[in-house]
Length: 453
Ligand SMILES: O=P(O)(O)OC[C@H]1O[C@](O)(CO)[C@@H](O)[C@@H]1O
Image 1 (cartoon, rainbow, N blue to C red):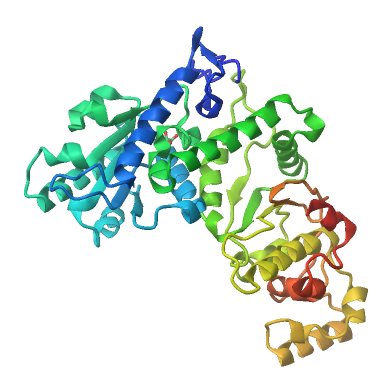
Image 2: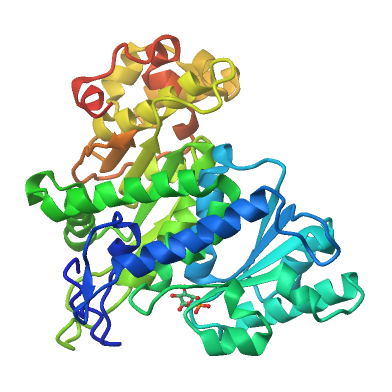
């Protein structure tokens, strides 16, 4: 990949998104030509445009500055930009509003523009091909909405529409001046394109310096992937764990569980990245596989998921490897929110890794007061479980999970055999398993959990 070889054999193309974040001065060749200077030329054009818009120098048709940016795109031309905007919102210019329209359902567009003024609105039409049905339909609707709002003057389009695409011909046909087109290349796959010009909305939101810092982070991980021996190579280890659980333990899905509100759209972004990439049943040699390929990726931010589906992860009948993601510092630290959030993520990992035996449950006495289910109901269930020996509340250990805290560290587990459960104990486990974590999250972590912190 890093050598620019045409490893996309179906389209005979290089797969070079790593060049999008290569530093100035690097050399990555495609067909004998160094593509890094082109990448930085586009980044420079994006930076110039972004600063003019952000500083109010770019005026709309009626002379007003731009306050609203609407990205129209779908798949890789939407999911990456939405995820990045949400993830980096803390660094965004709060005087501006950002919206993302992708669905062919007219409600998506209508709701996105219902409270914004066309005079102050910029549309970014993001489409690698500039032919995708959903995007072009929404783009034409946006054009009609703008013209209606600005008295029908066709000249207004140039001030309120820019394009991100590889298809200059179609961009021109649509009526966007190619001066306002930001290009990329056929060696950037749609689902890998968020750090190309497809990230223009991100740069408009956070500024070119922050965008550059993001690219630098991506580049550091590219380098880690390129040069680190396999036994310490994080992407390789993550891939092997996935193959291990899906191929050898019949796990069908992987839960992605960010304990970080800013990453709430990360599971949706990963869904396209992983499943569009690896949802294949034919090998590079054209043979039908006789093994599992991509699992289903899904997830929700913690702790919302705990009050929804964690019950099944802990005590259901299916093996679901979990990727926990958390940050040891919060960008929004009011009160004790972050300590409680961290207590939850550590406790969930602890529960999956170590479980809890019936003996432990008995020895602990009544945990009901620490749970948020009704006290009496918990006592009744507890007594029932003691009397009947029914394993209402204990759960087996070694459920596979991986915790990434600040920087990626890996904790792998082993296979489980599930037991029956009748209640949703999962949401209570942070307090049941690790009461000390609520007071001091460095206390009482079992060694294996502490190692990943
Ligand atoms: O950017 P385009 O050309 O509009 O395509 C949108 C998306 O459609 C796909 O080709 C698949 O549906 C994605 O890979 C791509 O991100």
